[in-house]
Length: 194
Image (cartoon, rainbow, N blue to C red):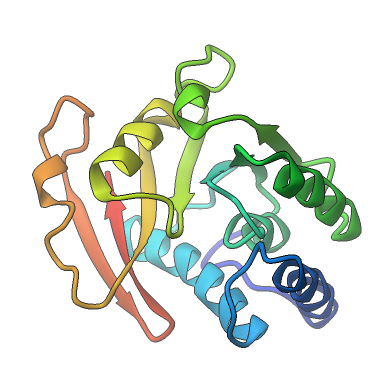
């Protein structure tokens, strides 16, 4: 696959149904579900802008909640995706949703605190891309992501529009990030740590 991933018509319809259920259950914020899908796809646009041609084989989603962006990226990219959430009600639902979307063979759902995942030898440095949407403040997000992202990989985090420098203090920190690339797209703002 080259360029930014996309969802086809049937994939979009299936995703809409799944995410409407996530909203009904309180796992996904309010607002039009198609906007949540667009925002999730913005993560792929952000990593493409930071590293053109990147087609990750492995992605981790910190605090997956209702599956945005992790489930959306699993369907759109064909990558192996690890969905991490500490709440069993959500992880049970994420496992069911991955079956509904026909990606269960490539999706692993972990019911544990994110900060523990990067310390586990199975998951340490295991993913080319780590994504986070509304997970935590910059320092804890970067610390959790640093344990999971592979050497040379990227961490992509959604950002409020006015937050241009929140991640700068993490560059050259012991976490190993050397650069923060701010990416503004029509569907959202992102910080890419590499």
